[in-house]
Length: 215
Image (cartoon, rainbow, N blue to C red; front, side, top):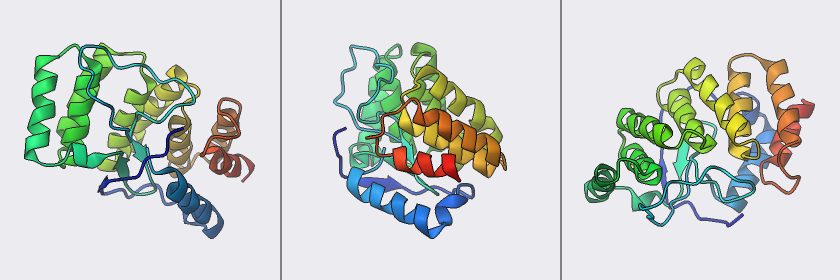
């Protein structure tokens, strides 16, 4: 997986997700992980708006947005920040309404510019165009989970994300954390154990998922 430096962070209100990551051992592991690997709700991809967005394949650089304990990060978020960049991606989405990549980029731009409701709309449009892309479902889950504080609405999207993209590490990670926040400790442990059968032991999230599975 290519390592990317986080250039911009969109801090959102996230009341959920404090659980076991607040424990010193797990938080230390999480902090080390972020320092090494950067963070993933989304890698900024070169605009290729004549082709549809590819579905998740493992392992690869995460093209979906990565969510930390209380916030969602956008890889290379500066690419989307500001009214000029926002308008650029909105224009591309308008010009290519059947291109999931263009719609996803518009969603990221809206999110970075603090318009989560508009971001949700674009992600849902992208799903209609590319319904087998698990990472898009993950991103919708992130919005419901952290931006809107509606974890129950996030749950089916995270479940769909790992169903469609079983090797997608962040999908599993988000699902485990959500189940924990909902008080479903046994379910979270079971899901973490299942995730370990789907992602390689070399995956950056493997140690954290292993902690959850053995907790």
